[in-house]
Image 1 (cartoon, rainbow, N blue to C red):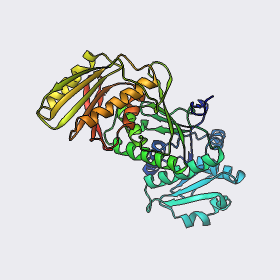
Image 2: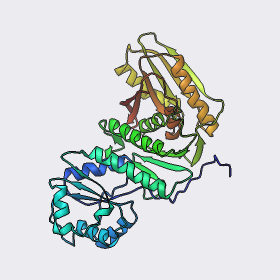
Image 3: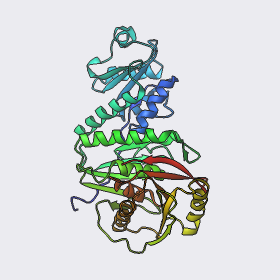
Image 4: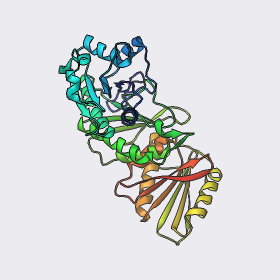
Length: 382
C-alpha cells in the first residue's frame, strides 16, 4: 500500500469519558461541551454496577462530578469510586459544584481514592463547563496519542444522529443541537469553536494524516473544511469520506479538471453581494425554486450576480477537488462584500469547498427547512 493511501479502522472506538450521573444543569452542560469536542459521554448512563464498570473500563478515564459529599456504595458515583480504588492506574478528574475540592480530600467517603492519579480538579464557580471540556480534550487526546499514535487519525462528525460507539478515533457529536433535522441557530458559534479546539489539539500533536467522515448538515461540513483548510501545513494528507449513495474516499490534495459542469450566470448589478448556487445531488429545477423564492423575499436589491452550477454527481476525488478549485476561483474572480451559498451537494464536497476558504469574502451558508425553504445558518469568515 502506498504510504499516502488512507488507512481506516472502522472498528476504532472514539475517545470517551465516564462522567458521574447527576441531574444538575452544570453536569448536563459539561457533558454536551465534551461531546461537541469529541469526548463521548453517555446520554443515558446506566445505574447498574456491572455496566458502569464496563463503561469505565472502555473509556479513557473517569470524571467525578460532585455537588454533595453524601455518597453511598450503591450509587453510580459510589461504584466509580470503588472502581478507582481497585484500579489505581485509571486516570480521573474531579469537578466540584457547590462543594470544595479541599472538602473532598478530607471527607471519609473519598479518603481511599488514588489521588496520585488525579489528573486535574476544577471548581465550577471559577471555571465554566467550556473551559473544563477544553482541558479534558487536550489531556485525553495527548494521552491517547502517546498510547496509540495511529498512522492516520480518523475524525467523525455527526449532527443528524448521535455518534456511534465505533468508527473513528474522535467523534464530534453535535446531535444535542438537532431537532427534527434542524440545528438550533445558537449552536453554530459553539460548533465552530469546538472544531477549532479539536484542530488545535490535533496540530499540537503534529498529526500529518487525517481522515474526515462528515455525517453532518452542509453548514457544519463547510465549517470543518474551513477550519482544516489548505493553509494548515502540518497536515500533509487529508482524505474525506463521501458517503452519499456509497462510501468513497476522496483525496483532498488530488488534482483534476471540472468536466461536465454547467454554469448559468445572471448579472443583476443591483448590489454588492454574490449568490453561488450548486445543484449536484438534486436536479436544477428542484434546487432553483426555493432559491428564487428566498432571493425574491430576502435579497432583493442586494445581489450583483447569481451563478448556478450543476453536475450529475461527483464520481471521484479528482472531480471533487477540481470543483472545489472552481468554487475558490469564482470567489476570487467575483469580489463581493458577502457571498450567499445555496448548495445541494454531498457533505464531503462541502468539506472540500470549505478547505478552499482562505483569504475569501465572508460566506453566508444556508440550510433547507422542511426540504422546501432555505434559512440562513452561519457566516464563515476565513
